[in-house]
Image (tube, rainbow over all chains, first blue to last red; front, side):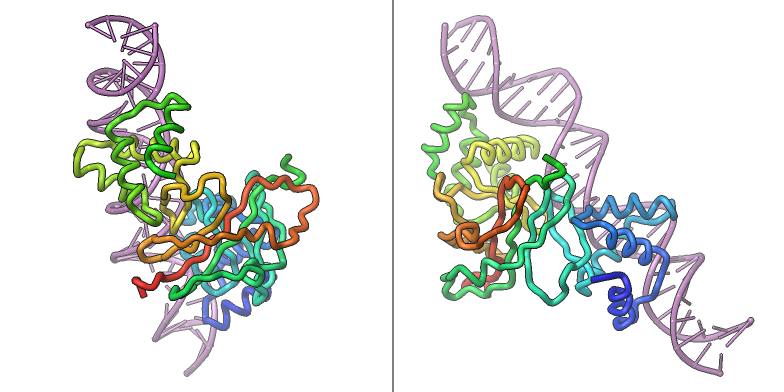
Length: 136
Length: 136
DNA sequence: TCATTGATGTGAATCGTAATCATTACTATT
DNA sequence: AATAGTAATGATTACGATTCACATCAATGA
């Protein structure tokens, strides 16, 4: 997902084009891993020292709901990244130092015969954690 | 893992046997799913209204480090459960309503050819979320 | 039993996140 | 371009979960 595509999606749902949103998308588009909400905020403050955290959280949540961003909880913080292949289900290796991710194209749900009678499955999470080559 | 085994482990690492620890282990031994740290605290308060949250968190963290408990982050809260099969690697289905778990005996790492050159894998997480039969 | 060492309680601090609401900025229309 | 309508923002406040510092207290083993 690139920035233009994100704007299309936002427009489709009649969200307005604002400086803050532009900055958030621009920032995340250049990163290739997960970034904590707070770190996104830090970046926004450079251009706009008065941004409120609420604005950041609201927009990140909105973007995640629209499928523009992917979201994960990593050691108690919410982390976001551009949705790399919208529509294509996948998972990630995540570097525990810098947050960088690598694509894992396969999904365990396709390979494991899960035997869970009576349960209603809503979702799943498969993440591999470790150190990327640069962080070792 | 049962309570006696937990005490053995604690003793091995020269942790003392205290009322609070007894209560925590007793409580978690009787539950069959993940329980939020705060809920463990609520229980402890029944016998010992003055327990501090710090004590609870400290002990839960210690127990998790020793492999007595399993830990997971579920919507921003830390959840704990008795380590069901210490030494035997496994995963869980987790009910998003009540926290109850079901064993998933297989591990995706054994079934998926993960191609991550140069990375140092430290761990992984595979969890399936949904509603258990009782909570639907 | 006593001394040592570890565990605890207190109370407040911190950290991440969410809610409220008045003000401001988009957008489409005139 | 001015305007109206609506959505987005910033300020403030609040909240829940977790952690800290430190003095006191309790379990252990000599």
